[in-house]
Image (cartoon, rainbow, N blue to C red; front, side):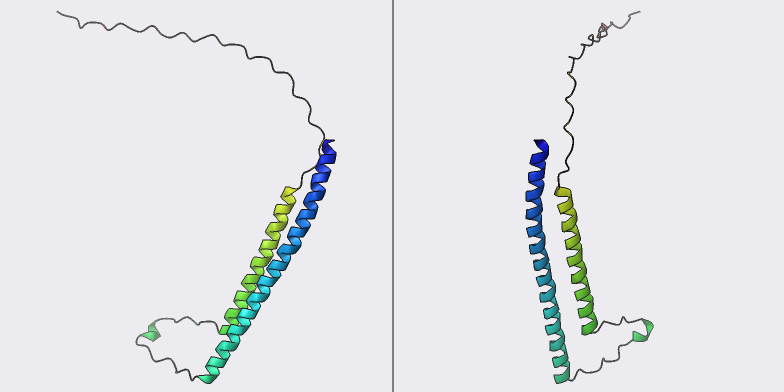
Length: 141
């Protein structure tokens, strides 16, 4: 009886998790596609702006030779990095969902043995309290 109930629960859980997994995959694919379109739009916008507007050269900065200035990624490189991050995040989400679904399954097991009847605990004898010492009056000479 117990194994039949577990089997029914697992079957229903399998159907529910299959629906959840397919819906989650569709949502994650939509998120990745939307981000790709947003990055593509941003790159096209940056290209159009740089072609339309002359960007002045960077002015000479005093003491710039003393410091190592960082090189910033181009818009295309930043877009590639961002899309790679979004894809990794989506894969991590899929992996996490798979692990959670695996933890939800109930394993069939043998019925548990009945616990042995418990005997009432033997009463411990009450500990004797030490007799209170009477306060002694200070000795007079």
